[in-house]
Each structure stands twice: as C-alpha cells, then as structure tokens.
Length: 115
Image 1 (cartoon, rainbow, N blue to C red):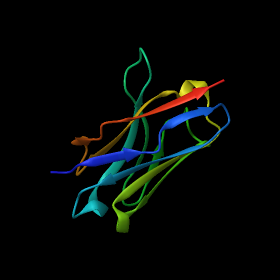
Image 2: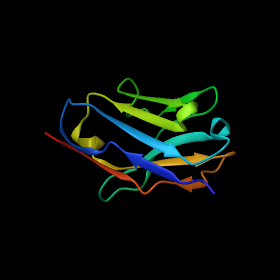
Image 3: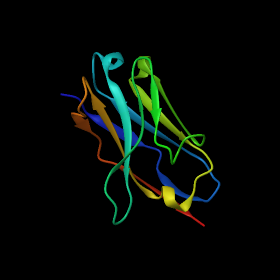
Image 4: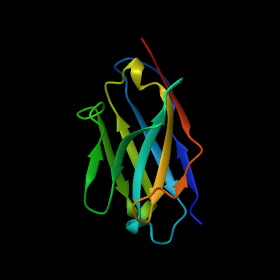
C-alpha cells in the first residue's frame, strides 16, 4: 500500500554531514508518522528518530546532531545528520505508520563513517 524509497547514504569521514531522504507513495502522507531506524554490524535494529504531525523524537545518541523534518507536499521525510561519528555507521531504514506500529519499511541505505 505504501512504498518507501530512501536515498542519501554514502561514505564520509568523522565530523562530516549527510542528509537522508525518504519519499512515500501515500495519498494521506500528512497522517503518517515517519521514523528512522538503523542497524549496525552485529547489532539489533534501533530507533533513531521520528516525526508525527506535531512532534519529533530522537534517540539520546543522536540528540543535538541529527534533525528530522518532513515536507508533506513532497511526501518526503529527511534526516539531517551532522557531526557524524564512526559509531553512526549502519544501514538506515525509513519506516511509516498510520497508528502505533510501523507497517511499512524502506530497503535501507548504507551510511559509513570513517575515522
């Protein structure tokens, strides 16, 4: 029903910035809560950030460095990542939900931060 397409990943050095984008195919995009998750090598998938119609949320590990935003006219959510650290290296996934559980997921985009 909802397809998510991610872009913006890549190889960067510590201290650099990246902006991830996720575009959704949904006629009622503004009603969706959009989230970003990541999975590092050998680790479980973890929550990074989310944005609803009103609120934003961040994991403690990224507060002050990452900023989530959305453009409802473009059906797109962004994750601006500044001051990147090697521990930010992971596959980043975009997700969406109409309610509380995340029903739709993107394929992921690789972010690699070297020291």
